[in-house]
Picture (cartoon, rainbow over the protein chains, first blue to last red):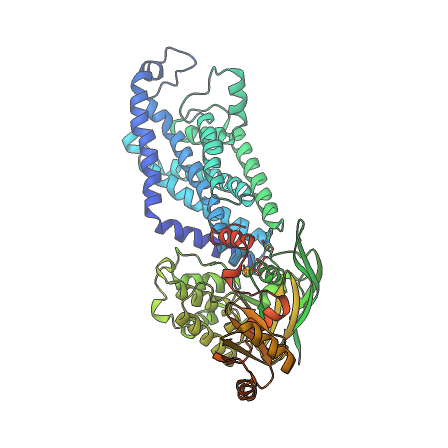
Length: 259
Length: 325
Ligand SMILES: Nc1ncnc2c1ncn2[C@@H]1O[C@H](COP(=O)(O)OP(=O)(O)OP(=O)(O)O)[C@@H](O)[C@H]1O
Ligand SMILES: [Mg+2]
């Protein structure tokens, strides 16, 4: 009971801070729109033949490029927002607030779980804003689809926030933050198949793609939105749930490790 | 009197560096206990160990009857903390910071609001409670931190350099609150400072240097360790005057830029004697009661003041203001 209240308190703070940080909220939407509409439209024209025409068996999903990347961009938004939220722990350390949390008579596990849920909520919110773009992309969302998407988005967000916490727990300086964004977040995004179909890739890349947890996240979103999938949905879910559990356990462990 | 904190051979090493070197002391219930020492003496490190944020290398402590090592949660519930470095969430309002604290310390929801109002009143921040903390001045932030540390009715309040970096007026204010607090709540206050004059506010003071406690007493008791009052004189010939004072009165005289300094009990009675007895003309004379500064100088041979910090200390201070450990 006491721990539930602690989790709620930590969650509430993250949500409040996010809600007040409108520039961040808008920035995330702007970044996503840039990818979706500018890159999507630009690249889409060149790829139109291959994509919509359906001549090439590998590169022929038979849909518009923008529609193809739309679920990928939702996945990107969730990945970036989750990691950003988790890495705010480094900020808290730098600005001293983390001490206030760590010296409180609450279990460290509650702190980690509260953080993970907070980041997940915030990322879910950003993902939901992305759903508003559906009509502009030319995707019709039904209420059933939206509910499924919410579930999947939350699962992805929770997993990646937990991953971010595991990373942030050991990081002492702000510089590390940009490193993580560049060397973890971007590769994960590129390899996830958010921007291109994962067919006929060279072996080394296919290997990396299969190791990238976001691949399965994007796959389940894409399956829900446009009915296109790389792997069976059950496999996507299995990988994502497994990854999420592993990460939250590690996050709790990291927080309990006294320093 | 009851002991609220009992520290036994507490030691902390950071690699080669012994930050806290086998200190033992007791703090009595209800007193204002001060840790006085220069930068890097080990004050914050000791507090961090007492509040369970840092594991001692060896030794231990009992706080409010709980073992710091074995019962960290009970210890945490018993203490309030104001850290040396700011620890507020400046994107939240003052009130939200207090609410966060009340909730993680699991205050009963029905008491929570009254208590928050009460501590806000104590530090005069009621009318600013809904402002974001980032818009607060340094002194207001400090007051808010004190208020926050009090919310959960702690038995001991730790104040690590509560007035560091504040202007003299605000510093006086903070002390006012600390004294008010002692009147109103049943609380023991453990504070650190390297301002000599502020240490006078404490009931007892431990002087700490290089991780060791080198003296522990009431401010007056400490000052008695200095051999009486301090007299500083200037003469037309300091060399001869020094010799004469030494021969005639058997006093230890120290020279510092152009003046002579010595200690003597009941200095005010000694002055007329000195003026008539000395064959060299005196151009100025100064008499004062000893300060803690003198005590520190006497015990360590060094002054405590910040400007006397060596290059290593200065580096450390720089690193600290950059917020890095
Ligand atoms: N995490 C750490 N790692 C390594 N050395 C440390 C660490 N924390 C403190 N020290 C060192 O331990 C010594 C004592 O530091 P401490 O912060 O306790 O001093 P202090 O008395 O609080 O000084 P100040 O008045 O400057 O706050 C210093 O030499 C400091 O550099
Ligand atoms: Mg300190």
